[in-house]
Image (cartoon, rainbow, N blue to C red; front, side, top):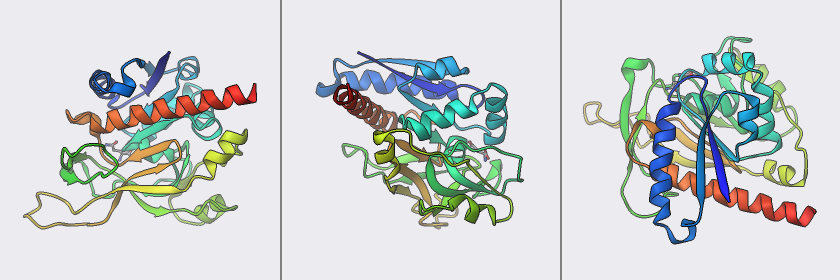
Length: 269
Ligand code: GLN
């Protein structure tokens, strides 16, 4: 069976993700449990293309532009269904993380739509402007093997500044804040989605401190990788490196999620 993974290709670093997904899939072919798995990677620009996907990556770029084009392409609602109703595996990098957050600050009201799916508030452009971009070595214990820290690249990156408790009224509370936008809420559609929405936000990566600034660590402890059920977000851009480890790990997550979904469909039938 072929698993189809889409990369939202409205703006930003979608090409780079597709390239690294191919490298990751090749490497996984050497992995015993994955040898038979066939993958198809597609660029997603229309609801019909999204419909074909078992998993989706929302790349880095400019979240405001991406949200605008998504709205014009009639993709916003299908994307929200994909992530929040069907809880299909979705990974957002940088601008993609912003779009997957339930709440984002430093944004003019009405200036930006969010998809949502991660019960977090992100602080956009946390480290400043493009010229403040930097690399940092990250310990990501969820990655298998012992290949050392991941060299993460941060470009006008957001961080997760708060994990929100998924209680009633999360939207109202967040909307009381200035310059903060929130995603529209969604009701889980079926038992699997209800179960998935009960998932808690897990913190998968924190910045040890900005590297390469006079050798002094800064901003230690900022949250830069989170996962809630099938929704995964990173502040940085693994697609702009040649290290396929996170893509490999994520493809395994997609494969597991597809397997689970198929089993539950068999039970329902
Ligand atoms: N700061 C950008 C935004 O708000 C994201 C930057 C990036 O994806 N490199 O969308």
